Figure 1 (spheres, rainbow, N blue to C red):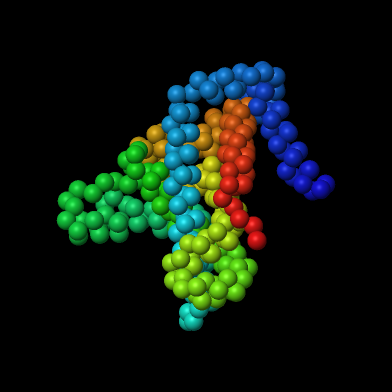
Figure 2 (spheres, helix red, strand yellow):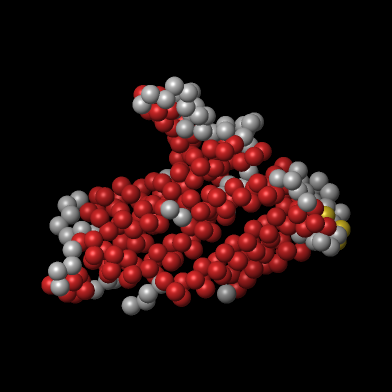
Length: 277
């Protein structure tokens, strides 16, 4: 508890206080300004677009959960050969450096010679879009990467949840004439909902913290950077580029409250669809 207080709660409290202050470019001459940082934040013209980008990315990345449920269920099929190898292959990308993987995906989405556009051209599209320099497509491309990057961790968690489901339920369902689809729909998914609920919580929190993948995909001097920022990108811009630590702290507190509100709604809603054995 002492470690949690020092390394988690103390920085949160310090950051909350910093959001009510302003300092010079070197972090000195701290002055209490009340709610000025929050009023300035709400008046920012780029706040709505950053909020929408963050919410859109989070919503799309949540699609990784149902994909992972299907993959984990297939990996647990009786008689499947090479099960351990498949698990390792799905989990390996999760162990790699995120920035290194982002650079590979940046090449994949390259508008001139990327594999995606070369494939699209081979299918007959003469002028495919520039995915990482078109404001409306950047977040979608990064979200596709986010889905791919999170499947490995999700599959491991879901595989553990699948092992906790009693096999007698499947045997009884087979005796009653239930096929594979009915077993999946009426046994696997309902009894896997605690693991699914945990992953939706973690996926949503990770979605609101979008920064490194977006930063790595866009690079520097990208024409779509301004319209494709996330909330954490705004925090980085204010706190570490503009050296406005009070404004950066206010943005981080806003993110904290937003994540807390979404998580509270998820915990309230789970009473209606999560089934505990």
